[in-house]
Length: 375
Image (tube, rainbow, N blue to C red; front, side):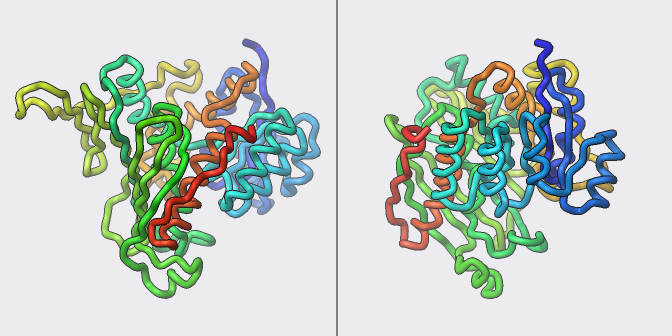
């Protein structure tokens, strides 16, 4: 395919990680960048040889040459910038989460349908090598019948800037909701969540959110499956962990307890001492065009002077970045929904938002909107 998509990246902190990937993707043209701070805009533009530069997001959206925007701005801006882009006739890829309210998630799903444009939430975990490994086991039938799914995202965010201090744990839950919903492409129907422990008073008062840990059970629609996810951000002693575990009738996959160790596969009906086995996770660069395969192993932020906290703490996000960019571009070229699409992204994001509401209500069951119906 010779078609190329003109991509504009919005936000050049973490967003700069994707510039060389789009530059080397055979079906992408890394066309424009947007950043409010002009000095940073020009520094990045000069570094990567990008001539089209905007300090105004509205001016960027007015450019008829822009086919798609990849939004990497702060979380509070995601919904507004996504809606503006869709209504301006641009396809949208947006870093997680989709929005900070269920109402905005509904608006984005509706705007995607009304505009006829594509939306993709760039959830790293469902393109990380560990998830792709489990997905391969599932699709080959090696797991047997999936019986239960579990995931966690624990992180010490002390010292992070802007909107992070005191954030309710489940308001940033897509890294653990995405894989448990995404493996079998399930739709969360309702959620119940408990808060546990307390964070310091100065942090708790920012969002009126006292909990150190929030743990939720998710019931999936038209399925016999449920999942368990838990999150912590402050005042909990834990090495960074984005874990994903799946329990099947034939085999189960468990995340290592310590970063850098191999995951464990449990195989049914073996002698007890042979059931558990540590297995290295293969890379899945072969899923990608040859030009961008090398990005599964390294990226911009492997360099010490460019070390972005989310990339360093997240262990390189499992080599997911080139897979995300490739899925987005491929969906536009092939005129199909990307994964996750708008309604799936809204479902995953709203699980976390409503889980926090449930925790504030002592674990009340809260139903999710039917985003699929709206799409």
